Image 1 (cartoon, one colour):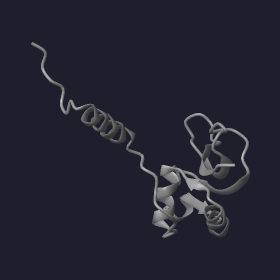
Image 2 (cartoon, one colour):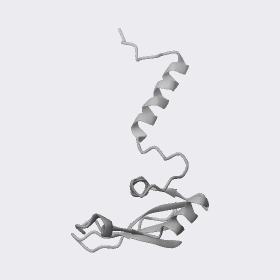
Image 3 (cartoon, helix red, strand yellow):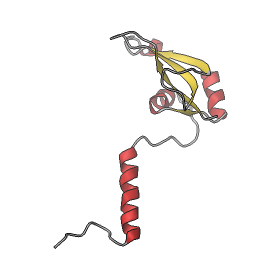
Length: 115
């Protein structure tokens, strides 16, 4: 099972609140979770109280192969939790690179002007 550590919105309208959870990647954002790992309230003024994590459980899931989402990655970097290579969020540049490789393999390079 591919496990992700990501945020699940639990707040009401105009009052966002999120729960940090270990969840199967195939489940929806609001889907069934495996374990609750913490809490994030972006509207709290105190930066220390804004994020509450069970760091031992987060480390456990990372050791088991769970991949944190991009947002959770930024939280963990601030808390100096390290793991393997982070995932790339820049999808457009990867697609452009693949297209350029395909064009080069086809022998075209850049698009040629039609006459």
